[in-house]
Every structure is written in structure tokens, then in C-alpha cells.
Image (cartoon, rainbow, N blue to C red; front, side, top):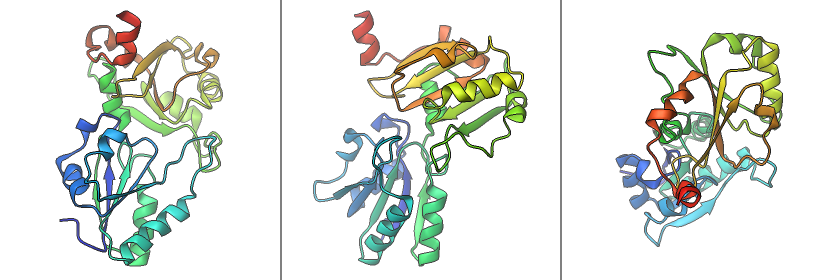
Length: 255
């Protein structure tokens, strides 16, 4: 039960509204107010009753966005006013979703909260592209990383030489803007330029599209649709037999 004066931090999944959990669907029906990210679909928001207030708190790279501190404060103030608050976040709240920061702010304010995990786009989005993030014939390890830090720059705290060698598969969130810089760092660290790269845009939605290239050629890409997940490594080869999802973009191209 989503109680008055509490906040649920809920993962909305990678895109398709049918990919939310039963608990997330339950919360949509009970919330007084939904504070949602830019990547939460209108179809998912439509599952909530008309009476439910919907507040946009989306962050998109290069565009005016609310500050994280202001979002956290908004959640606190809504809860203190007695609202049943649903904080709806794309993917999973704790996978590069700043859910930990928001939960920490709620803790310090004495606001009760609950975490409802979601399907991360780094897992579910790749599955919709026919890419298993792990396969026992190719990799027993995978690295997840974000392509930018708080300032919007390539994360300076990432040990790129170590990352390049640590796992056969690297899954990158929010990496398109700095893809050229990231690929050069990986190449300089000894990663093979022939390694496969797949970029899955608008994953698990009707507008999903996939670009396939190599690490050496990835920096040449322009106008890549975002949001997108970038996967480096041999697992994208499985698309040849596992590419099952046909969205509107492919229907348009192939009739």
C-alpha cells in the first residue's frame, strides 16, 4: 500500500509500458502525484487515474533540466503535504538513475520510502535488440558504465585502461555524446578496434533502431538517435539469430 506521506522510487523499465512490474502498476493506481523522468512514456503515465497529478522532472543532455537537489526537495515537500508520491524513473532507480541520491535525501528528511526495482535498459533494452548481455560461449563478465559525469563530461574517475581489459563486454549508458572520446580511450588502452559495437536507440519502444559498427569506426557516427545504449563486445553477433523484435522503425524501412 502506497501510504500518504510516503514516496515510492519506482523503475519504469526500458521503454515499453508492459515491462513495468506488478508492484509498479499497483503504485500507478494509488499515487496522488507522479514525479516522472523524461524517458517515461505517455502510455505508461496513462495507466494512472485522471485525478493523479503528473509532474515532469526530466533530465536530457544539453537541454534545460531541473537540478537534482530541487527534485529531491520536491519529493520531500510533496510527502510532507500528505501526498502519496510516486517517483517514476526510466530503467531501474539504482542503475545510473540517481535513485540512491533521492533515497538518501528522503532518509535525511525522515520521509518513509520504498524502492521498486525496474528492468534496466542495459539488460532489457539489449534483449529487445536480440543481444544477450552475457553468454557462456563469449563472456563470463560484463561492465556497466555511464558516459558522462555530473558536469556532463566523460567521467574522469573511470580507469579506462583497466576497464578496457576487465571484461569482454562493456555496456555504456548515456555515452553517445562522448562516444568518440570514449572509443579513443579504449583503443589507446589496447582494446581491439575490430571489436563489435551495437547502439540501440529508443530501446523496447516502437521506434527502436540499431546501428552496428566496430570500435575503430564508432567515432565516425553522426546523428545517432537518443536515448541509446551502447554495447561493446562479441555478444552483439547473436543478433544474427536472436533479432526478434520488429518495431515501427523497421516496419517502415522493410515494409
